[in-house]
Image 1 (cartoon, helix red, strand yellow):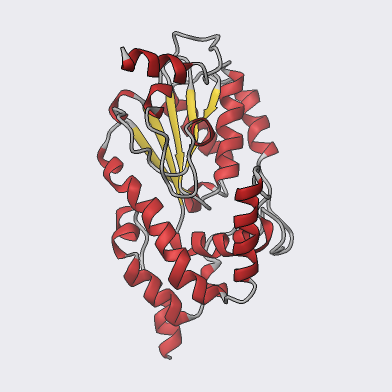
Image 2: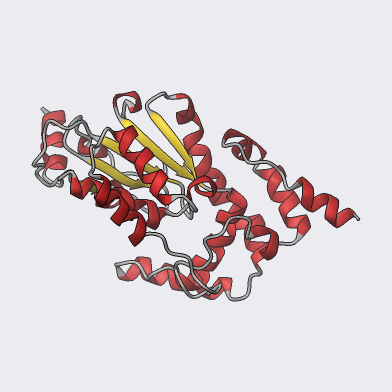
Amino acid sequence: MFDFLARWRWSRRLPKTPVPDIPSTLHFAVPKSGVVLSTNIVRSLANRMRIPYVRFNQLSGYNETLQFSPGSQHLFRARGYCYGEMTLYPQVRLSLGDYQSILVVRDPRDAIVSMYYSMKSSHPEPPGKATAARMNQERARLATVSIDEFALGTGVEFIRECLGSFIPMTSIPTLKTFRYEDVIYRKREWIEEICSHFRWPVPTAFCDLVARENDIFPKIDNPHSHIRHVHPGNHRVQLKTETIRRLEHELEREMAAFGYQPDVATWKSAAS
């Protein structure tokens, strides 16, 4: 009886789907891995397919403690939806192998740099007075913290937890992982690969349009813009060599899991 009521309560949060026969899909993206970019792309494609794009993080009660509300697994339906913008693997009863899923990751060293500037300057103020107050307190704190201090403290801890939560998923055949560095300069091909993996027959002309709309590259590095710097490798400019060395040691498992290598060339240059 309780399970039935829980399912009913959670189902009321879902919009009605006009395509109940299309298999549901999942969209995961590690924080600061182009989450806004991949969300804009996947949501546009889903809309073209008339599939509701469900922002699971919001509906599930996800918060800054990286927890999800009990019972939020009842939001998942086998057909009719695309569940997206999941920046942490939800610790709910979910059979991932039953869904075609994508995961977007980024070099964690670059992600940490991006996170510093986002938390310090550019991230939009969240809704809710309490949450906004916490963000303003953190921004005040970061005004006195260098990027290297942040990277070796809050930055590495947060990215390790988020990226690490996805490592067990990588062996699941229905999951396709995209690295930010591999797709940022080839968005049209990326869109085609997403459609193919999700088995969405999106018209070519519409894919072309989505690629053009999202092919954004800032002319200057603006710390106050949410799209600050999209080019890979920015950590080599922003962080000290010793900081990068320590990050690579701290994140050795996470980097290896997604094919990221230490900056050997940087070490040789620094030593010469």
